[in-house]
Image 1 (cartoon, rainbow, N blue to C red):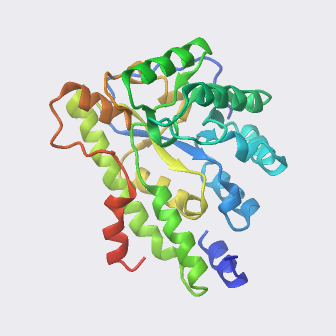
Image 2 (cartoon, rainbow, N blue to C red):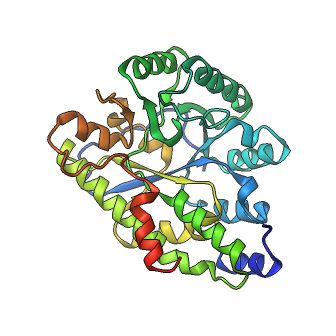
Length: 308
């Protein structure tokens, strides 16, 4: 169902370039730091996508994010316009496959690899493109054989895993918000602001504590959120929340320079948050680790209770 004019009005109401060398990161840092990484670029699902794009870039005007693009979403005129604007603003661009197929037991690895190479060709003209790859849904292989094959493939083609340390379910909040707007022309999108912020803060605290307990320090965090309606409305609030709670905001490429991102946990099925996987590898934190690490089933009771 299309968005009404009233809904569009409610949405609107709510609403230096990276160094060429990898910066050094002090591993003795105790104050939590976080960088924004954003997946998918599902602009087709956003009402008034040009205005949403402007709101996202405005919210990120004082930090540099990493945008992991699905090839088919940006292999068109509007998608290219999005990447051109992110590129011009100094953000980095990464590879998120062409069709966003999850790497699971039914996936053909050769087709998955072909999608990575195809998207790389689409992204190659942008100066902000860096060879970082993010697995859809953070699924990195259901078996040891597939996991190791993909690790070798990425290394062969010069890619680094664009791992996540703070995973979350913003995609589910966005899905519920859009469905509610389609059902109710009078619904106020702002009702999602505080529940969303509470969710991200809870997950940030969980993964930062996991980092300290597993590694003895707070890593340079990469937060996974999505290019969607929800974040076009509330990303500025989310960044403000981190600042007011004492977290530092850092550029995404700086975060990826943390040595933790060279780690390759020995877990099967492979994937989830990098910190989740490192904790799982030790065998000492199973009482804390749910599987999958983040999913809609964990957040549904809260949103149901709030009438959202």
